[in-house]
Length: 81
Image 1 (cartoon, one colour):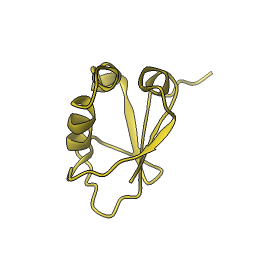
Image 2 (cartoon, helix red, strand yellow):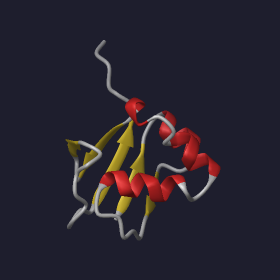
Image 3 (tube, one colour):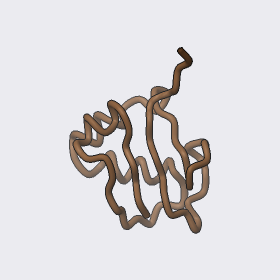
Image 4 (cartoon, rainbow, N blue to C red):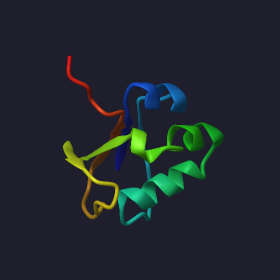
């Protein structure tokens, strides 16, 4: 699946997008796998309350299933202006 990173998440990880092979069943499990990769991922995913996730371009929760998913995106909360 494709994993996309936006705003400061992208800055901490250093790439905007990557293809990930995973056995994770949920977004939460995917995050745990990513955290275990390198320090930059651990820093980016240190505080999940500061992150939002979209699964196949729909705002989702971290307990969302990854069955059949093609894309997961991580980004900070959006603010109005």
